[in-house]
Length: 126
Image 1 (tube, rainbow, N blue to C red):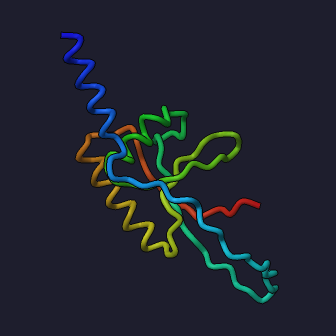
Image 2: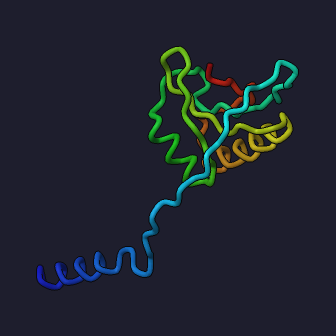
Image 3: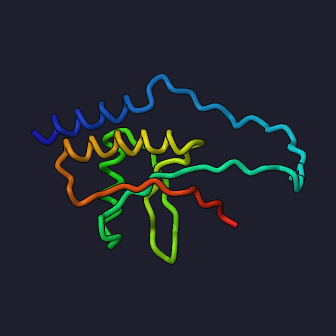
């Protein structure tokens, strides 16, 4: 029985990466640094904060795994030493609100009452 299991494992691993080719990284063209002008207007962006209703620490792995399983792309940001789970950034507040509505619907269907969301202004790291 062990020989059969070992043979299956070897065959499964042998097929990993089948048909994939590894390409050498291509050289990137040189990028010239452009200094922003004072008259440049910075566009406002929006995020959707996701977490427990009382902003207490929740297992990030559980929350982020659920978000990935349900098709939400997110990123983590630190604020006051705490990890924040954010969807976005979105170029308009309407886009962020639409994503929040979709998230709220999926949370309700999954009966996840311990998670809420809030549309916030995107913070740019200094």
